[in-house]
Length: 165
Ligand code: PNS
Image 1 (cartoon, protein in one colour):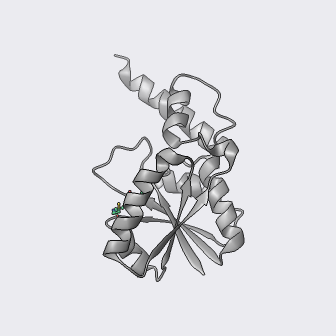
Image 2 (image 1 turned 30 degrees about the horizontal axis):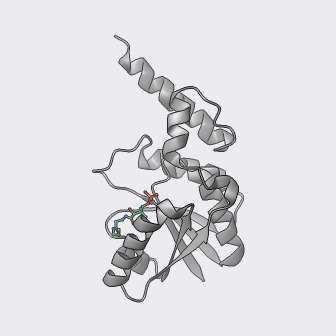
């Protein structure tokens, strides 16, 4: 069975990787799909987000990195996949996830969303929090792989140099 694990991945964290690894063990193939939404503001471009994912997921034979725009259910149909996986970290995720799952179900009744509960050690982790800690020079090595840490530091350095005049 094939599953789609969609998200912004701006950037990928150990929390995402944990969900992907667990899916890779249970399903034949995992398609990690990065949302390419030009009207949303991301720190990393779609190419950078995909490139980081490809680097950190290279060791998984049954994991593919792809991108999508438009509706997730339309993308899933195009991929011949009827199962979407999302991670649930805490109760605070529930409302948003429930809304998304119900909308997707309304749009495409044959597509199911299933949830994997994040491991306790990742339940506080998000791409936004990692970006904030990195921005203030904090240690992020326990939140993201070294390739992502390097990319974040370079991005922040690049942004800072733009502010100098
Ligand atoms: O990592 P994120 O930002 O929580 O992922 C959200 C994502 C990409 C899964 C969601 O925004 C999405 O599926 N967007 C595509 C547009 C869509 O299908 N919208 C209807 C369902 S809310």
